[in-house]
Length: 225
Ligand code: B12
Image 1: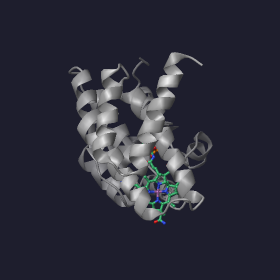
Image 2: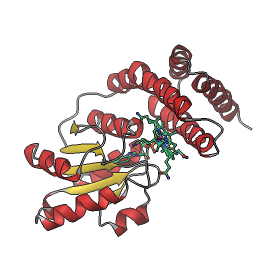
Image 3: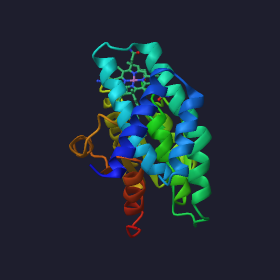
Image 4: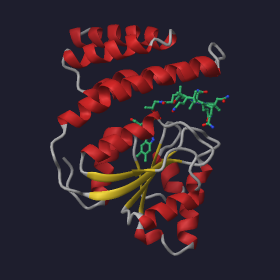
């Protein structure tokens, strides 16, 4: 095992403990330390925080933890995002010219926003104008906002198998209104797959916050970076 992966394991174990004990201060301290030791904010988020949250989800599924614990975990992660990752990501990115406008939100019936927020932030620091509609967003609200903001892309997040059908609803509405050609639609979220995106006639699927940027650049006809 390399030193790097040992370091990753130790960091994950420590953060897991901070999540389990709902210790926001400890979570923030661990994140700061990880960045000081050279991890980039997106690597820390994608390779440490995100897998831990999936594990927490599994514990919840197995009834080892319950909703109050899940909520406390999310609070620690939100503190890490707001106090450490967001400022670090913004500080890293230089001024870039506007490359397109994206309306983003979590679809109806769904209040998960940790992943969606990271996607919005990464798009923003990579030159996209981002209009975040928040969570539990009905299809028509996405459409009205896209029209009003003259968006190029509509980004939809879903974390629940029960809210995924609202992504299809949005695309069917766009088609019904004769607006499908005016907006590209990108979908993502843990239960969403490329096959699902294809099935509901979305333009693309974005697996994580980094690939979301690449996919949106591609949708705008820009070269990969
Ligand atoms: C934290 C959490 C919560 C928090 C959310 C806090 C918040 N503000 O977001 C709280 C406690 C509120 C919560 C509530 C519930 N939750 Co919950 N939750 C989770 C958990 C543990 C982590 C989610 C998360 O933040 N992941 C980390 C982020 C970074 O990953 P991500 O969202 O996948 O995002 C990345 C990519 O997917 C992608 N991406 C995401 N969005 C988008 C959008 C676009 C456009 C693109 C391109 C890419 C993209 O990029 C992101 C960054 O890299 C998951 C477990 C899991 N497997 O995800 C369960 C999970 C999603 N929850 C679940 C459940 C059941 C619920 C509840 C119904 C529980 C209940 N009994 O009330 C409620 C639902 C409330 C509602 N109506 O939405 C289930 C869903 C099961 C299912 N079959 O649908 C899961 C899978 C847990 C489980 N295994 O049982 N939850």
